[in-house]
Length: 190
Image (cartoon, rainbow, N blue to C red; front, side, top):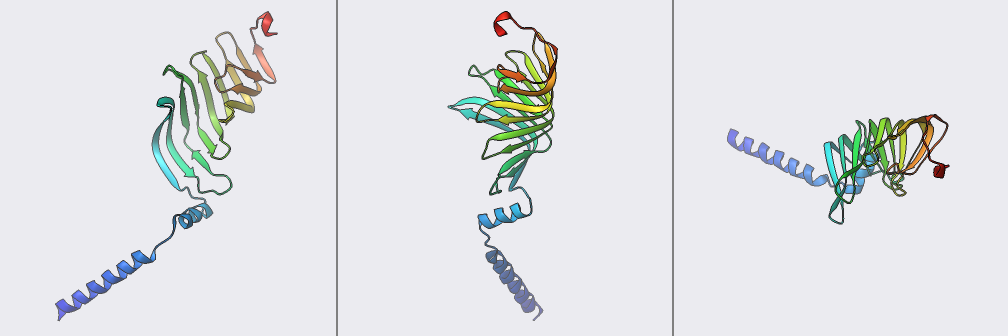
């Protein structure tokens, strides 16, 4: 009798467990909306290393200690790198071209504009130029950097400090605003 009662209880528990599993049929959209309402990411990763290829050639490498994916936002989906990021672009010869790093970054998926904050350093390895600032915006569609924050721009010939800087992604064409420092130019540059 005791054995039969135990068997009945196990059967009831199994039926309840199976019913519970089949009753949980939330769609992906419902889960994404729930996470968005609670301001939770739809995905996360630790110690990421992402290699981007274009036509079979490596064009960039991204490293970050923590990554959060908020692509579940309807209006402004984004990715967050709360503990910093490092991006290395690779030229057509397979050589590191430009390195971008900072303590925090947000990338908006629809506009392809990124904000990088805290000890932002951009280095062009080919031209030996370096931009340092505390906040930078990067328009990835236009291949363009800009900041209205204080900056230091170092070239092999000079060091320029100021507030407000715009440049091409590789730091070859740039506009510096409200500057101090020594700048070496040639007559044709003027």
